[in-house]
Image 1: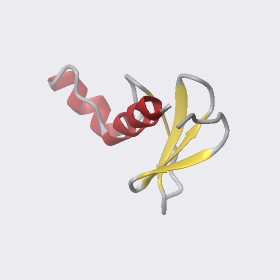
Image 2: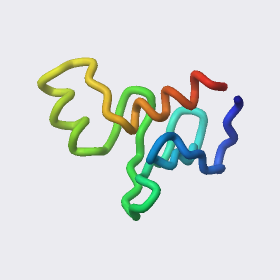
Image 3: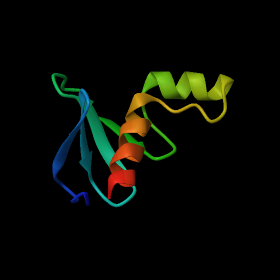
Length: 72
């Protein structure tokens, strides 16, 4: 599956909306908060705090983007 820029995709309970080849806006399907994320970074609090303690940690938003890119 190839993904298109500026088209929403469901990944489990998240909506992934790529704004360019490397970044996407990711949100829960029933939430208004959009988080900017890439394959190695995310604005969410979970990633910001946990990645300091555990290098290599990925949040579910990063995981969703990686899964979309693996399918393409």
